[in-house]
Structures are given as structure tokens and as C-alpha cells.
Length: 308
Image 1 (spheres, rainbow, N blue to C red):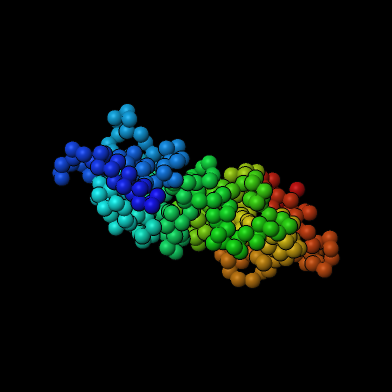
Image 2 (cartoon, helix red, strand yellow):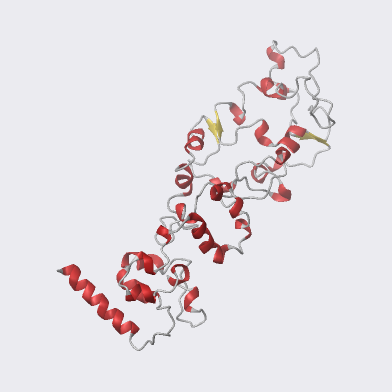
């Protein structure tokens, strides 16, 4: 009985709102009409950056409020609701959702590569990560806290952030977007152009690691190709590791020997990587920590062998 009474009241209010409109009138009815049937959505939507009041008269109705995203609402009102009479994002394909959002957000440089990003190619749409109406977080209208949104799909990365040595994402010191752009990035300038997973560029198209570890930036008189060309992840696991310094191997010299083994024809001059001298006995603990002597391993302005 209460539901019937509510429906009758809604119909009466809608008739008052639409009274005097001709069949050729503007199909946009304004957000106040939406409020009558969707009070739970409207409750905090007026605080939302997508909402723009037309009270000042400087915005067209089709560019503001609910109808800015969902389209004209007159047919929806006259049909007493229904997803078929309005642009309902829950029924749209991922490409359609992205197209709708890019109608406004295509001007954002950070989203310039969204159509070829790993997320888009995997069928992830904007509404899979963002909650437009009722976001519980203060920034970016995310459906959950940023790390929980990412962990929903990237469970392996979540486990890496629980390792003994890791970047402090779980502690709130930093966020995934400090290094990654979930909307896609241009081709990288390191690792021979092999595309890492949407890793954001820092200044001068460098790895995002250098935004914090600026002492490793250079330029140096003597560059270490493993750093400048291959990138930090050649030696380090950026998310987390069981080894100190986020190294990929537990002992330092085993990391170095991945390249400095005298094999192959790779290297800066294509003549292979310099092999260790006979004086370096890897069975002797004195030589098992290469950085004890080669302290400037990320680059040096004094010595080509990165010595002190």
C-alpha cells in the first residue's frame, strides 16, 4: 500500500514538473526531477565534481547534473523509470562507458593513451574502478581506497607488498599511481622500449623511481648501462622482495654476474660485458659484495669502474 501511494505521489509531482511542456519541448528535465525517485543517489551528489548547478544560468542543462552523463531524462520520467529509457551505465559495454567518459575527459593529458592501455585492452571500464555517485574516498571518485581497487585484480602484487622489503603502499606512505598511470602511458624510454605495466614517466621521460631516488638520476660522466638503458627493475623488484634493497637475488655478486659473465655480444659497444678479473675469487666472502668497492654502482663522475 505504501509503495502504491509513493508511486502515485511521484506521478503527481512529475505531472506538475512537466506541465505546460509541448511534445517538441527540450527533453532535459533537470536534476531536481531525478531527486524524487533517486534520493539515495542525490543525497551527496551535489558535492560531486560531476554536478554543476544551473542556478547561475551559465551552463546548459545537457552539460550539468545527472543528465550530463545519463542523457535526456524526459522519456525516462514519462515511462516511470526503466533502464531502456535512459543511458544506464550498468547495461553498457566497456567501450561505450569509456566513450561516454571521454566526452569530457578526453582533454586530460593523463588519459591520452587510455584506448591502448592494458586495462582497456582487458575490457576494464571506468565504472569498474570509479564510483561516480557515492565514492567513499576524497579523491578521484574511486569505488574503494586506491590500493584496494588495484588489489581487487592484482592479487600477486598485493602479496609482494607483504614481503620483508617493499615499498610502503600498505602503510599509506605512497600509492600505486605514484608509479603507475592506470589510464595508460606512452612507450617507455628504457628497457629497449619493452612496455612495462603502465609505468608513469618522470621528468625527461625517465623511470618514476627517480622522482624519489633523485640521487640516482645523473647525468654521470660514467653511466652504468644497466641503470640508464635497461632500467631499475633489471636488478630490483619494485613492489617487494625477500632480499635487502629489493634485489632480485639474495647475494649481491649473483646479481652482477647475470651480466658480467663474459658471455654474449651485448653491451654498450656490442662486445659483451666486461668479465671479472682473476683476482675476484667469488668463493671468497670478501668479493661477494661487489658494492663494497664499486660503491657508485648507479653512476659515477670519478671512476669508470664506479669505485669510491
